[in-house]
Amino acid sequence: MKTEVKLYTNGKDKNIRVYVCKDYETLSKKAATIFASQVNLKPESVLGLATGSSPIGMYKELIKMNKAGEVDFSKVSSFNLDEYYPLEETNEQSYRYFMNQNLFKDINIDISRTHVPNGNAADIEKEAADYDKAVADAGGIDLQVLGIGGNGHIGFNEPDSTFVLPTHVVNLKEDTIKANSRFFATIDDVPKRAISMGIGTIFAARSILLVASGKGKAEAIKATLEGNPDPMVPASVLKLHSNVYFVIDEEAASLLEEYKPE
Image (cartoon, rainbow, N blue to C red; front, top):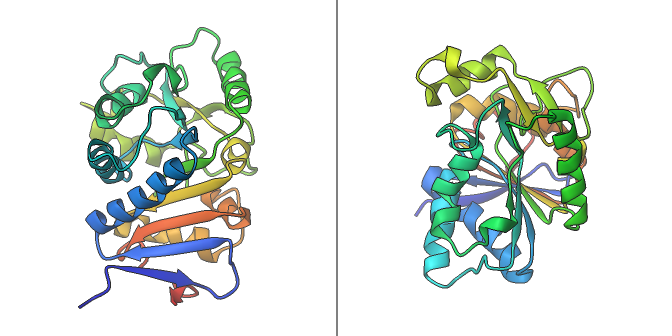
């Protein structure tokens, strides 16, 4: 029988574990297992969360595990990566709304300990600085969940000439706006700016879990894992992190050459 999850390695980067899963369902279960293990080992974990299509399956699995008594979220705190700007949190396309609908309402989490950047703040620069302070005051992030954009962005950290370290306001690239337009009535409705954790805030997490699915992510995964750290591929900075999991499906792994099954 075909193995559903394989551990890939390039033989040198011991800080990186690449789990290649046969499909999205298997990927979601594997990612949920890693996520739940963090909470079970440290019930008061500070969790960094992501939105988008990639982690939805993982969140569904975590809801099942929570209802089955296999993981308890009552003591955790969470900080989301990003939010559109300007956008009210009650808007159905906001990331606060996404998290409430896709995870928070169905698990035993204290909603007052869940944090999403305020995309409608009167002073958005102050909101960014305050967000980093809140993460630091919470003790830093234990496990940060990431997706990856087709251009290699993580959070809303777009390709740039330098890595932007703190939480900051981002002007979204045209390809990101186009990719996200599937969630809006028209492309003109997509906000052109966002507030996002910076590369430094993400990198400071004690462990990182990146999930990616589909052929559309294959080039970004290859550039991240097999290229040099480069701000034009923001996710490539993860190669320098001490503890990172990539949980990807076979299509997302299809262009890898240096990484092979163990």
